[in-house]
Amino acid sequence: MILISKKATYFFLYFKRIIKVSIIQKGEITKPMKKLSIILLSSLFISTMLFANGSSEESTTEKANKAPSKVLLWSYMSGEEGKALAKIAEGYNNSQSNYQVEIEYVPFGDMKKKYSMGMVANELPDIGTIDNPDMAAFASMGLFEDITSRVNDWNQSDKYFEGPLKSTMLNNKYYGLPLTSNCLAMFYNKEIFKENNLEVPTTWDELLEIGKKLKTKDMYPLALSAVKTEEGVFQYLPWYLSTGATVENPSSKESIKALTFFETMLDNGIISPEVISWDQSDVYRQFASKKAAMMINGPWNISAVQRDAPDLDFGIALVPKDKQFASVLGGENFGIIKGGNVDGAWDFLKYYSSKEIMDKFISQTGYFPPRKDVAKENVRWTEDPILKIFMQEMQYAAPRGPSAKWPQISAALAEGLQKGLSESYTAEEAMKEAQTKINEALNN
Image: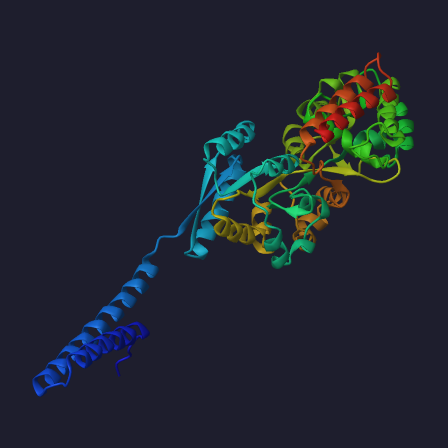
């Protein structure tokens, strides 16, 4: 049975009508003309059918042989994390034939500059990896695509911890999905606490009381970072947010209380005067060398302590609270670049963000899962005595912002923290200056 395509039928009827009109115009048809017309129509029908069917077969073949659409991903992940991400991309590429993800490595320190230059030169990827506090600022600059409708239709947002998901948003719109997460908690030396018959502090008052008992000439009770960078702000925010303060209002009584508490810890020898120059690596070294009984740091230091100080028996606790437990969110997001291969980028983000694939990636790295169901259903996060505390802390981890003005807000808070820990400024004076700078940033 021969199947005639619609296209072939259309062409046949079209040419038949032309011949018919021509004959009518010439007058009465003769036998030779009738025979010629039949031959001509038959030839046209066969040619048209072959042409149309041939075109259909060619279109199907071209579609089958069509190369997958390229999806370029910029990532600053290297080492084991980079290898794990490459395996995820390979698995995605093998799972379907529409898109091909290619990863280009960009060093972390160069990423923001490359985004800025790429926007000017129109040389950007389809997916960008970004430190989560920077996402809102770049979204406001027009780097990322608004994917709110896609996220809502996907109907998976309730699977995420609030902090990581919120970090992908600006003005209630989504511009990407969380890639990894982490937060800050308190490491403590179990041996030191046991020797002094002390319980691990859970409140600020308990920390001051216990800290006074632990202070020696060779050891400060608590190590943390108050350096004048994003790291210092990152370490300060759990204390700041615990009072109920907001980053847009540092001159409030709550935020002044947080800085005053830092001054009190400094005055009582709970923290070292050197905290204003320590980054998080310095904090780690103080704890690992037993020059600090406690430290504020992240899960990336778990394996480091186990490697560098194998005889140090340590535990993890929540950051001591004022009014409420609080932590701060770290980690990365995937952002979909505006004007790029949005469909392909979204398809890959959905693939990575599925429970099974995210669990596979997270389990191979030192990161934490942004999805609650991944954390809940993997015994690694629920039974490990160290990791389960970090996962508990994740419930309280707030994003930095999200705000398009976060870089300016962070800089003002960092300067205020430094001035508050100096002898020339009170906490109130330092925070009022920070308020002025933040107001200027928010109003411009």
